[in-house]
Amino acid sequence: MPITARHPLLRRAGVLLAGAALAATALTATATATATTATATATTGAHNGAGPGPGPAAGASPERLPHGGRQKRPGDLVSAEPSVFRPTPTTTAEVTSWKITYRSTGALGRPNVVSGTLLVPEDGAGGPDRPRPLISYAVGTVGLGDQCAPSAGFPSGTTAEGGLIALLLARGWAVVVTDYEGLGTPGTHTYTVARSAGKAVLDAARAARRLPGAAGLGITADSPIGLMGYSQGGQSVSWAAQLQPFYAPELDIAGTVAGGTPSRLRFSELQEESPYGVAFTLMSLIGQDAAYPGLHLDRYLNETGRALAARMADGCLNENIAAGAAYSLPDITTSDPADSRYWQFRLGQQDLGGIAPRHPVFVYHGDADVLIPPQLGRELADAWCTRGAAVRTEIIPGADHLGAVRPGALMGADWLAGRFTGTPATGTCTT
Image 1: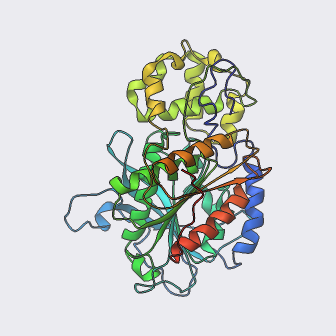
Image 2: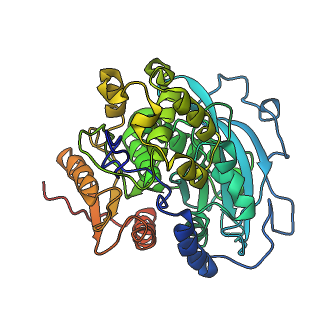
Image 3: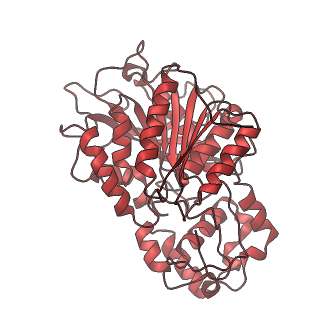
């Protein structure tokens, strides 16, 4: 994705958006069509059944979610309260939902707290002896402000990927959606810092299993787990897949579906114009700086840049695009971060492909994607294949970044269904 006229930051890594860099409304339209067939007409809420929903009371504090005297661990719940899930503003779903906060780990290994949402179909199909699959779902770019978080948008149906999530719920699968570090919790969202995001994805699955009463809903230690995400979400679940054997070895990951994935982040010397100005560049700089304080972003920004960064740090995607449209990177900086080896090093730490997932992965990409070129998806699949991973790659003919979302998600969900039933995965690796 071309970012600036001088040094397009993260070129070919694109803009890590929610399947909606160009327009979140386009994905919302796709999700609405999906939700129409995937959701029911019952009034949605924290619990839509006749009886009381399981789990802790609204606003449960850390003290009310006891840890049995043991040391606090990543994935431990900090709080859980009833929430509401609408796939779109005009559709509802028969689900029980919770807004949760849980413990995780930042890019530098420091403990943090992340928010998210747990959704369970009200189908009566799950129980302690009837485990249901659990999807840990990662959305793409929504912005940097807490009000942009998926958990903030679900009650009103304004989270762009709600319709796709409803499709998974309609299969009888539970879904937990992370908000990522700093998006919905104190601190700045560590946007594009995939090592942190990958841990948040894994710890969301842990938190879902540790919810009091989860076993009664079919979320048990025997529940097969799938990871799923597109664009920024694809980057996040890909890192989760790589980290899982070392960070969360107890999780039974049956498969990962990663679409439109930016497999590397780079400063580029190529000269390209961006129709979005500096928005995605600056959001990425803000996110990296939040994770790695030694980057000292403020030292590179001029007065205009500092004011714009402060505004974007609390803005959602469309607002930030509008705010940054009139600027390029030279307009807001006193010196170029691209000249810093430390900046280059930290960006390079987000590169994917160096660790082979130990479970099957499904990689998909649109062959007409100019935001995150399909070559990045192919390179990621090839790198994993070379390291012995079981990879299936699907390149969707004629699909751009937005156009690949729906067909890829449908194929990915079908593929995950096979993993959940124990069907052997067939790969496309040639190496």
